[in-house]
Length: 509
Image 1: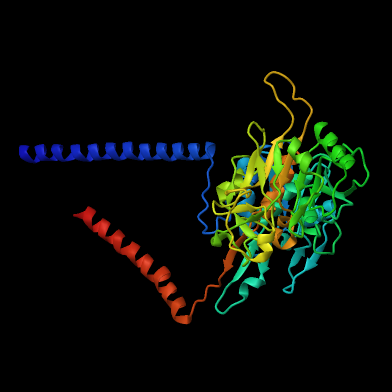
Image 2: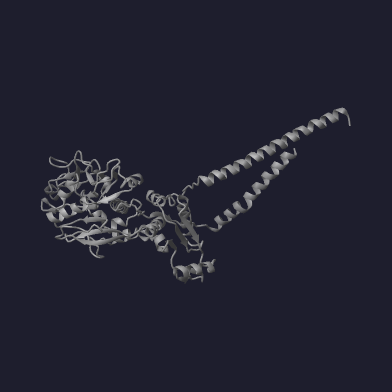
């Protein structure tokens, strides 16, 4: 070998060594980066919700509930992986676990894990049925337990088809996804102490807890029961004292006036630390409004119930031809009771409401307001005469306050809170009607939950309205199926093969 050949040979080996060194360094750096990313992702867990209907985005109230869990909770999912709601449920449970270490999840397929399921079924008394194809199916979808407390969730509690949405040609069915509502309600049931007590007054023509009637509270009672709240009737006729065992007292749409003694009993209850909701409709008698006997009580806490009827003149907010019936409210105050609803911009529907006024120096805060075009009509004769609707002398100019809240107890820094409670005043009670509470696109159910949670001092109360999604089937024709097969099975692997050959040929060069 010549001297020139030896020199070239030595020179050729150096780039190879340099290349190997760079390759080793690059591989090491990539490996370190992968380890670092995995470490950070393990410490900083995060998931993204890319669904168009935000199905897996937890509500603010659910996050508060999870962050406040102090007891361990076990969630047993007795569903097969092929069931329609399984994947959504599993994803939601995973997100719950990411927010707290108090939750342990158990996914048990009765058909694929019969032995494990039989043991748990015997332990918890879960019955088993058979599907049409012969597969086993548990009578319930989810069992939530904490200590000795248990709460069952059925498949109907998770998803329900809204068949009313099929009206009209070419429309797809809407599906109410209630998974978060059911899970969070179950967590409240098994982790709360004694059941919270809400007492609804009776004896003055108020809304009733009976199942029948136009002013029935059955839906409200069922919704609050999910949150471990006992709703019971409270007779106040002729009473001078009220039981302190009621965590909150609701006065909902009385049509007969409370006596001075009965009103004083409510004030004594609040001043001793009780909590009160006053939903006072305008009692129209000819061209005047009758008193409910509770206006002075509200005034004593800084909320004046105006002697008028709210007229909403913003046509975009009206749900009926009349400007005083069924109008939409989308303006919320800066208070924790309605803060989450303000963030969602979810509408509340009221009907035939009185306006409220908050005086200067009052500790009360407004919660709901009308549009700027609304006003409070004090001359009721003009409403029945069909005159042009516009604010005049003696009327309350818009925007008008529709709901207000006040905390009567005084809190001084470094000193214990003085006796006193919480009071919410609303100029309407029709927002509690069953048809409005059951509308998932409205925030009436959230308003009920927010009011109840605040008044019973359980801020973690959750009543998440179900999410509606389109139930659209995917239709694939024979030609479409062949196209999918051609692209996925033939063209994609072929493209990878061509790229591989190209890289190999380039390296050979």
